[in-house]
Length: 339
Ligand code: KG4
Ligand code: ZN
Image (cartoon, rainbow, N blue to C red; front, top):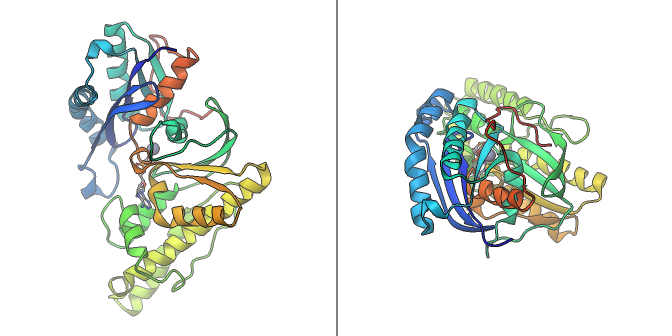
């Protein structure tokens, strides 16, 4: 296929993002994160939707300008169809549909979870794409999934969370500790200064390759309440150790399931994605497992871990190669399954 210029649009949660790609190579990837949710300790859907409406035009404009192309150079528009918050998705989908219609170019629907996995295929000196088949591990504020990936469009969820997502566990635990939203990066940072064996939290007993994080959240809550009764400065005096012990438990839960998935599928290539893949302890645990010969780890460049339109544009490129384009009836879908 000759060179194609693709505009990607992502608006599934609280980041408005637009990217311009030439095939699978980034020309620009602009992300506007919404600060409005911080004071509420979590994403407020109605506010997210309104902020997307304010951001979408300037973000797309900036992505096109940064890429050094003209709007008339675009060959296709790829947008996040789902899963995500409906009000947020609708802003990106309406914009993408209208622009594709006006420019008379193909429109491409992208599954957000598939995009987190295929972010590894963005051609960039700072990351290597895994070979098929591989295990995709999508860990974010909204999702925790183990996916068997046979090729770009053949993916099967083999394990997922039954309750809270892994990033949600970080954010909720952080809230109990008085940390700002999203608390994941802060807990990660403080954990590096603490003792991971200081406090112990039990791991949930979940069958097969599924996960559960709500029990851990409750265990941390009761633990903090108990200790607070004895010493009302407990959190302040032990913050680093609490973070380290919590993180140690979470990484243990995740790594146990990854190793179990490697054993049961016989697939050793493990590619992580999603905001939580920025976590230092998860990265270290994967590299340690790789050094022990248990698996081969693929860790995306940070920019492509969190929600961004680059990953949407790259799926757009692979979709275009297979003529997977959408019609005028294309629309957002909050609960969009992976396969
Ligand atoms: O993929 P993402 O940007 O948005 C969703 O689709 O959810 O992920 C955001 C999540 C938040 O829960 C945030 O706390 C978490 O990723 N996160 C981290 C780290 N950096 C971001 N969690 C643990 N350690 C980190 N370093
Ligand atoms: Zn995401």
